[in-house]
Length: 396
Image 1 (cartoon, rainbow, N blue to C red):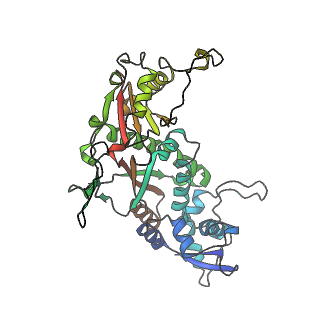
Image 2 (tube, rainbow, N blue to C red):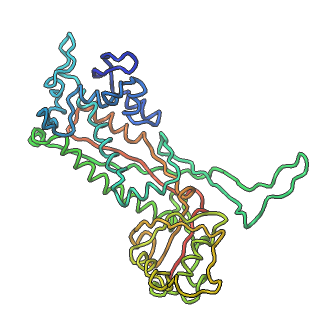
Image 3 (tube, rainbow, N blue to C red):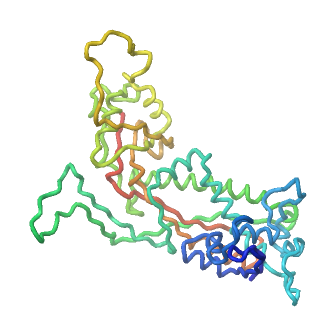
């Protein structure tokens, strides 16, 4: 257990709070981060930062150098051996036990996790940021075991609502069941080991940069693997392929049989084909296919039309072709396939599941062992939510 000083939100005065390893466990059981859990348990005055930020200030955990005050991020040695809070003059108890308080060690896992989360959810990230925008819903669970719901939607073009007699039950249009087979969210770990010689020379901000860089690369590979499973199928996680939702560009335009001959007519008809069940808001394809979309034949351009030329009732307006420009997320050919366009409706296409318990089990072991090695466990998986929110077209 460690003690910290914060400015209480209710009274506006200084308050002493106790934080221990069980707070990590309680946060995980509530599907919250430690930052959110502490803010709920010990509401701090937001003028001075969140509860975690005030605890970090109390323990001397500075993430970036401040030229005005001359303060610099602490070394990993001071965090590991418990001298961080002594140097910063934090709370001293009567028995002098502050010399062995784990305050720096206790907060270190959450600080690194927050740095990683900030890196992975940054709007400047072209790939992960684009993927996150396509996720329709995110669920947080406390166990790696998951029962995947099966949602069967009878499409409007297949059946329509029917007149109903008094006290009669309506025709079933939507059926939601749970698969008999459960599957597990794989747990991935990122490890950090620091030698005794390096601890004194390694600052907290450098560790944060190294961990966030590794985490981003790991998550990119994870997301690519999950997208490949959604598109090509994976029996281990109950994913089927998109064969039933696949068409060819030639089915829309007989002359469109390759990347070089992909036509504007095939593109527009593909976006419009499933208007009863979905709106294509996002496209997955490789860069060669994206260039074929850009350079499609018969694409209207300002250079091929003269609006001032004489016309005899040639202009018209479309009442119900509300096509919006879809966002294209470039992926590797191994993920989506060459000469292939996958369209999805971001409102219903992807469901993400995060196992928060995986991270906190590793943190508890780290703090209690007083180890010089540190690891972050993460469990996350994405799957198709509505199959009807996906469509696929091959160009060759």
